[in-house]
Image 1 (cartoon, rainbow, N blue to C red):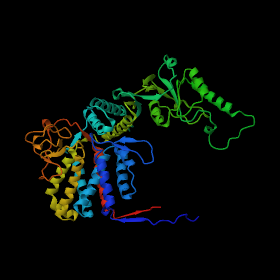
Image 2: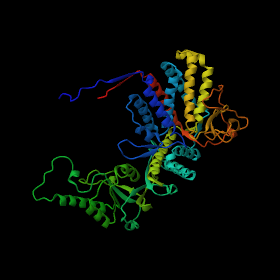
Image 3: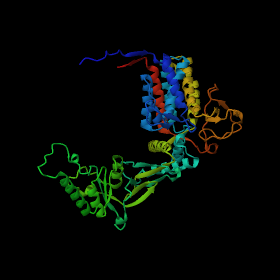
Image 4: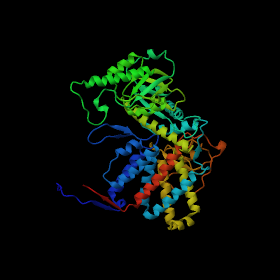
Length: 564
């Protein structure tokens, strides 16, 4: 068939960074994301131009997918950052702001793209090597003997999302809950390969955040008329059967292929007889909990309840795996074969819990549980949805600590510390490094300045209230203070809370030139406990993604776009 309209030629753009429209859009996205960074960030309302739900957020996992562009060059950068967010669940805004700053600073500096790429690769290797050293001054070890640093890490993630609208008391409560839920999913004294459990999150709207709670085991929704009186006197444990097939009596559930029906045969009564036979087997085998992922026929439900069996239908696919893991039951996919005893599971106990208008059945495991349920309460839907997102991110970040039991200093201190470290190391090794990279020392220093200023710009992005950012000239930590306060009279703590101001300290404003120096480490009584921490694994990954994506963007010469 011939085309109805003539095929349009593809559009070709050379040197996209020389295109004013592309540069303006990159700058706009950078300013948008910068305004969403940190505990005092400005919220964004996302709404498409043809209607739909309005989403209020400052999370990169929600915001970035909502940013659409007709420019493939911009979509390339966005997709790379989103891949990092999908993998690590944290530091998406850090990666995006750093990446866009590197591109913008390199363009403004006039440095050749191939030189900027080589310098970026070298300085990324310097940062990565330093961060992985045991004596790295911006790294904190996480011990599982104490939950203090784990709670600090969780609180840092939760406090960075102002859409949750939490008070200090509520924030601490949710942070402790997140850590407790995480620890419940880590099995103890298990030989061989360890398999982590699951956290099932249930949202309850219209209640105080302080009503939120974590329960070992699993909570599932049940009808209002369910009664546990008939199982109160039954000895523990209670046996469970779990069906993944529909028990509604539909012919579609019989299977694929052609169905031959004899004349005068009542298929409905035949299937109902089959369901009742199943019910008789369940009662005979002494099962006391009957759970189905889909719908159960009302007659079968009534029969089971009359014989003291608790019936739960419409469980949903999301809860099938946690329930199977909790009880040991194997999902039964058909009602046409005899259920083997090995498919049955067990629960230690059952009881009812009420959360607002939701009535839930609490299933307690027979032994140690690696499944827990987190009940999250909040005042309205927007805050509750954002709280769910941030708690899921927190769970993922806490799991990353099992692989790398350490964290990085937050509050912009890691960025300024790395910047000072890179400057000092680069100045001392400039001649040798420039020779290896095949550029002049002037070009190397220019590329180094682009890299360091980009790191510092991420730290400066944390300030949204007209304050000023500074760096101390001893430990190279990040400090913020009101614009009407002189840096010489600065009091309080640095961004991560580990360094307390001292009369002998000297500061300089960020985005100004200062003499390079070697950041001094903190020892013993000279340091406080950090109050803001970042995930080591997520931030290191974000640093690598940001630099590699910026290098890829700087290396693009042509963009060919099919407009058909």
